[in-house]
Image (cartoon, rainbow over all chains, first blue to last red; front, side, top):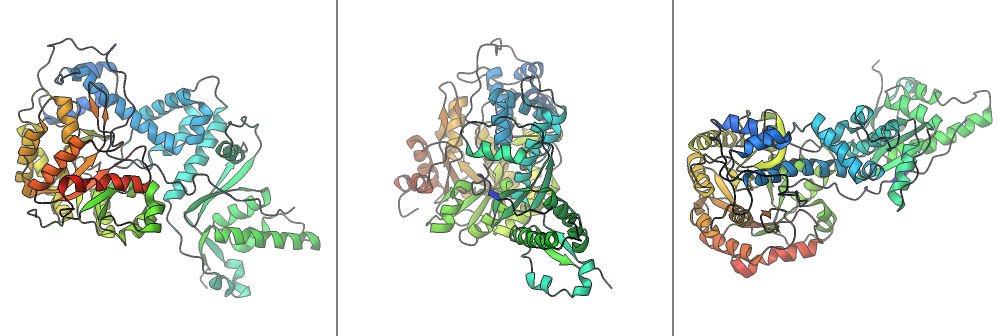
Length: 317
Length: 276
């Protein structure tokens, strides 16, 4: 059984830029006052060393109320805010900045969960995986993994669906940041002698990923991108999706089972000949063989244009 | 002219992704662009593709948020190597970051956290600035941050600390006059006193930006047009420095390129058309 090419879809974020990080402070504001109280005139001796100050302030900013209350005793009051309120600006800003970052990376997951449930998920992610890198580009990398174990609200969709949705959104982020492969040299491909085809392998590009899912996640994602209302969460039904970049724009393409087998084999470095063998066509049926050949030509054309491969390798004699 | 002979690039803009297409299509007459260094690190893909094309046409300056010069954790050499590589790739005129720390014990808050202004901090930060300058083979440019708290135990004002640090470490200063204004409101000091204390032969760049006034405190959000009060501070600092590269930061609710650039060009009303 062979298939024609499913329609590739340019991602709605394809041309849109990533939201970048900046030196600005988040415009979201903490609720100051109320439970935040520091008795006027209350103070403790200053931190003894810069190291002690930084360690205690990190706990105060990223940790619980007790650490914050303690650190506030070493902070001065301002013209209008007391020390604890001033510290709260940093405590709030820490989480808000990282939540904004996760929201940028996972817009459809955030919509699917709703604002409050997503913020709870993001807060637990931040606690489990605090940033240890100078850059936030890879901060959200483990969201799919986190979703498989995190404590979730009871009414949210199945966690395996959410984890697959997160994996798709993270794949899009990784493809944005992936290295551009060299242009594929079609002449080199055509120049391969027939007797060497058996050993030829395609070199995979870093800017392509294939996701295998239990749910039709890409279809859900696409509808969520294009429709105002969120689509219903689909029932399980296996799917495979290629995520890739063409002319610096993001594209997604659902793969049929035959395409998946061939593409998986090629991306794994199997020879072209063996990969094509995995298409699973009845070789005694000339019509089926011819159809398979036509399909493969169409797929290859898309994969080459999509920059799935950066070159071709032949086994050394 | 500053003591480092770093050029006055005129009026520039913070490079933001929403403006990439416009810039590449129309090549507007902007003096220079400043990039957030970390947005172009840990990536090999699209951000660098656009940056390379823009760097072919405009002078670039790099502005970082994660050097964490005040941290007591060791300097991150992997980060510094990537920073230097990006500087060389873009032929950036200089590299700046903030007088702050962003994390400790391996954890990064991605915020510009204030230091206690003490002799201990001064010695610590000056030593690290010298290390970074040796690594980059160029002067480091340090910016005064917006801050929302101060520590008991500080023995200096921020402006005294910054001036002393610049002299001690022989580094350059990026004077963010919006940050001066924001901090002056949050801590109750006079912006004029801050500006009076700056060693202007070390001021190579000025920042202006919008902010959000919450009444009880002011947040450095980089949203919206620049307040005239802040523009006047910029004009004053610009004159005292004998000219300096001036840049508008606009980081949220970013309008069209034309609107953003028009706001930057308001600088001419405060620093004079000739100086711009």
